[in-house]
Image (cartoon, rainbow, N blue to C red; front, side):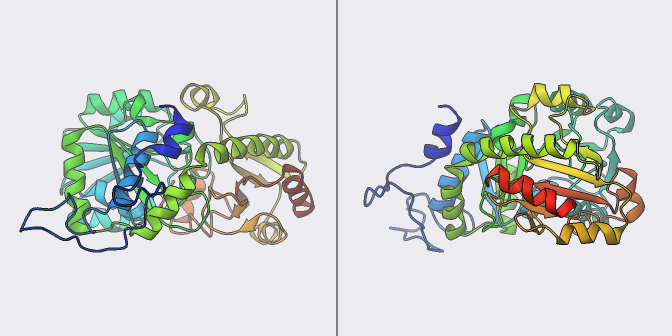
Length: 379
Ligand SMILES: *Cc1c(COP(=O)(O)O)cnc(C)c1O
């Protein structure tokens, strides 16, 4: 099956009791057993629930994976991956990461004796220089957030394999429509489903996808043992949202292309980050591993103080100033104080997350209205 067909059908079958075409919301915590241990595959909803299972199978199919697990947030999914590690283990990761990933690495897992190396993974050979017998995991985000670096997944997968480490790719920014890391050698794909997969800014959820059975079993153990699993209502909402993922992504990419072209020529813009530009440093890698370039764009305002940047951010009328991304509505974010507020100033400025940087999540509204809003806000 191809992408659109999978988005609409994968994991979903007419309900065996009523024939309902849409997967029902199985709002139940527990399941009847005929005699102890004799049941229909469901025992308790922390571990398995039919609505969630339909969603997990659908997300796995979109990533060309065999196994999917859904979590109550992207961070709960990340937490589950990190639980595969033990004290003394080392992780190699990027230097431009989602703020919450940086926080869980440094504030939660370092405490348990796990070491993290934050490196420029746009040079994959750097993995060799920093790996040793304790290196167990390589964690990659691409495109990176918010400076839109593109990391070569295939090259990083080779380096990770040579180092004897698992490769995890946070595929949130690309979505499964634009990029499928398992096909490029990743062991696990992680998603903040909250973003493009959910697509309507009404659910917080995460997911992990893998093709390796033993890895799946291990991840499933922590998923059930720790219990950061989502309920059936949210699973249903995401199943509904996912049916239009391909349509939404096409529109995000088209609007993104037009917004990027408009901003590149704008006199108030000092710098623009979007992988679709031919002069983007990793444009060739983006062309190789992504189907299109997406609707995430970051801009640095020319000669703007923090105060000037706040003023511009507050003038938008169609774009909403809010955290998050990937919904049908356009959003605007000030990473230095919002999504990346938990990263120390020296650390974030080194990778370009300066006070006058704004990140746009271009939605699927009419392009004329988006360009007009940018025009009036930039003044
Ligand atoms: C939002 C986000 C996360 C965290 O996901 P939540 O659903 O908010 O817990 C992780 N990685 C990236 C790239 C994100 O954008």
